[in-house]
Structures are given as structure tokens and as C-alpha cells.
Image (cartoon, rainbow, N blue to C red; front, side, top):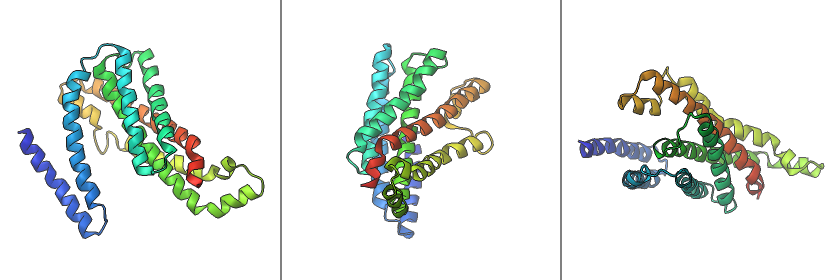
Length: 240
């Protein structure tokens, strides 16, 4: 059943490749290899989780989250392609994950178990990765579009950080658009994924929804904080 479902679902990727080819998007190769990479990574994750979810020591579980942050920083670097951002993206992702996870542990919302921290941490790390990539990409575009204005402000005595303030704010605003739209649509247009998983596992509907709300708020927080840290640490790299 699982193999049949996979083969049928892959028809959607094939259709996406056909559309991308027809529209001359030029990213067919990236879509194809990314789809294969997804299969390999998730199958490997399935086997790995059998071991990871047996962990009982909190420090070991947090090391797993740290490992996710390291991998995510390399993925961000693949997209941004600026060497300095490898370290800054790691700092932004790992600090954001810590700020999201540790308070929830102290409040008792998250239990110090692998079954809760690892999936939740993965959501936070993945969300932060997307946010910092989007924020930096927009920031670099804003800098290119405003380069004359930025140079004029610096020439008149403004600091580089001050000259980049408008681009900074616009990039942060852009990085939050997907999260805000997601919150607006939740419950009206779609049932968010975590709630769906819990409902399919037989959880009480209100428990699933309340847990999903916590996650949505955490994702918004992580997206904003991660993007802010990334831009604060990497703004000089965007003007080189």
C-alpha cells in the first residue's frame, strides 16, 4: 500500500516537471533531484528515528537539534552562496531553536522526551531555515535596488546599518508574510499538519488544536527572531 501511494504521488512531481518545462522555468533539474533527495532523506530519517526516539537524556536530544541546525546552515549556504553566512545562519538557527524550545520546556508545554522535542525542534529549525533564506534573499535584492540611495546616505555620514534600515525592515516584513497568511488560513482554509497528524493518531480534537496553536505561535516567533538575527549578523555580506 505504501509503495503504491508513493508511486502515485510521484505523478504529481512528474506533472510539475512537465509544467516547469512547458513554462521554460529552467528549474526542472532542481525539482527532479530535490524530489529524489527528499525520498532518500526521509527514508533515512525513518530508520534513524527508530534510534533517536529511544533517547532519554535531555542533552542527547538537544544535541540532535543542534545537528539539525548545522545541516540547515549548510542548506542555507547552498542557497545564499556567501561563505560568511554559513556561520551566521548556524547561529541564527540554533539560537532561535533554543529560544523557542527552552521556555516551553520550563513551562511544561513540552515534555523533555525525544518524542516531543525532536519533532517540534525539527519544525522550528526547518521553519527558521526557510525564513532566514527568504529574508536574506529579499535583503540582497533590496540592497541591489537601493544601492545609489544607500551609497548617498553613507556619503552624507550615515552608518551602513542606518543606511540599510529600510531594506532591513522590508526584508523582515517579507519573511513574515507566509507565517501571517498561514495563521489567517488555519481553521478556515486548511487544518494545519500537526493537528492532522494528531487527529489521525486518535488524539482528542481540542488537544490537537491547542497543541497546533502553540506550534503556530512558535513558528511565527522563530521566523521573526531567526530572520532578525540573520540580517543583523550578515548585513555586511549583502553589500559586497
